[in-house]
Image (tube, rainbow, N blue to C red; front, side, top):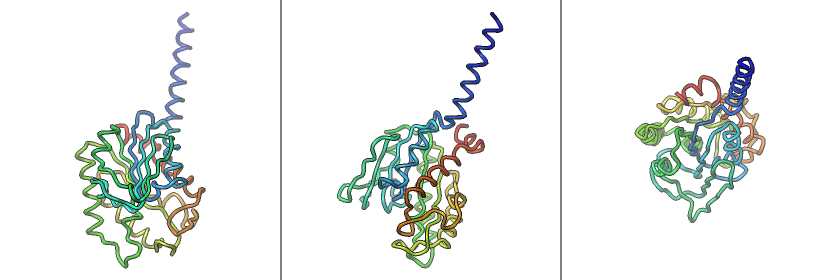
Length: 238
């Protein structure tokens, strides 16, 4: 009888271990904030929440086209926006009603224990000769200060490679320069370098900045894989 009880206990322990390995993000309520990549169906907002939910997370996603980091401290009109809960319907909002929402309100509403920021391209000022570092520092610091004041853990995902030229004048030289700078100013958020996920030009765009379906699927999987490394999970769940 005792051997049977031990065997059943071992089976249960093994099942729990397998479940933890398959759903390593269980227990995390993630608030995702992003720019245009998270604002339009078939972009990142169509893929990333699915990946995170599959790994066990509860996910609340918001995107606002053209929004800088500090714009998430207030309500600001933007050209387009979208929201999504878990893998539910993507609710896109047209320009006449599209806005950012104050992060403090979203934290109160959804009670997350992790903030995931997908921001970079909007602030890189691809159409300017230089990065406006003072302004970037101010807008990033304003958001990270609020996140810290709210007692939230956070992860900041930097911009990925694009293709030189195109509508937004994005260049890979500038995105490398900007990512390197951004990584030094997002503390206390942990920085994820999207440039490490693919070779330059590997993910194809249709306008120099926004990816095709395969590119967004690849970026989503790469972000999720970065979040479930043992080192990252230790940070997120400590």
